[in-house]
Image 1 (cartoon, rainbow, N blue to C red):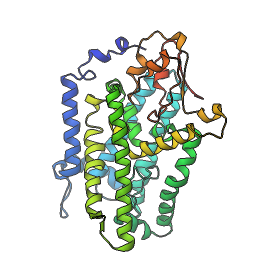
Image 2: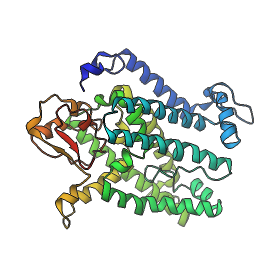
Image 3: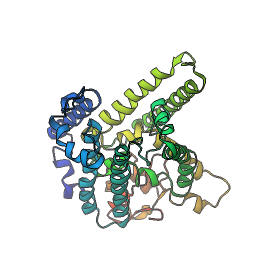
Image 4: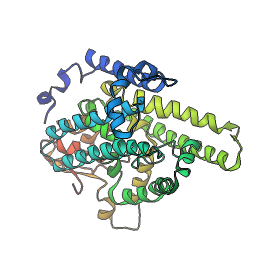
Length: 376
């Protein structure tokens, strides 16, 4: 598999040409309108009927949950369609790899069923909107008052949602990461990762591989994790004690700023809008607190001193056979997490990085079989 074969660097869309900039502007504008100016989409207000783009989705929304469409229903539908359509393209492109087939079908399934259909059905039953695969700290609003109140008022199902959300972070995530690394979530379940792998696949080579980007990545992604932890502690403290100011910071203001800066501007406007310019995993690399949390858990397992080394590293690394490397650079080019895989291969070193999501594309594009995703 080569760049020449796919025409990657010869297309204006995938080489930061005019088409890429145009698409980036369209995507960015779409997210800005979605988050802050939904009326432009035709969203009705004060009882007025939907028109425009939102109105086109009313029949589907009425069928699924008996309510007119909202801007978020439109977004969820388009998001899911993008993963399904581009997922088919991805399956065709990497049809020679069973691992790529299985994990792509997995993200298509989880996005369609858990992130789209099930939450809409719940709303139609007057239950809280809930995506069971979205885990705190990625689901940063889980512990906010409006969400907790909705679950507590929903009876038995609501209490199950609350229990599931806490167990997913405290118990399920550490256990699955211990055995499978962060790939179980980032490459098999997560909707953000699913969009990056499918719709973002044509732009994966644009990810910055420099050491400067790597240093920035470490500082920024873990800073976001600290931010969401402080925000969550603040809002829960306010809920329990009634004190709004925690260390002179208003908890409501803190949560509002997190929602604006991280939940909207970073994850949406930059994270997806800049696909054609910065690559498809900008959010996953630099902003996702779940990726940071998973990276910490993965690092703990890799460095765990009281277990057999082979088992400890199993499903956490990409092994190399450097003697066969021809320095084509495909592996580094197609790593959307910005890892210089070729440098590891040339030194015959296994790739064990907290940022690696185990997508296995470096192995799939290697023409000499130098790379192998452990236990594929």
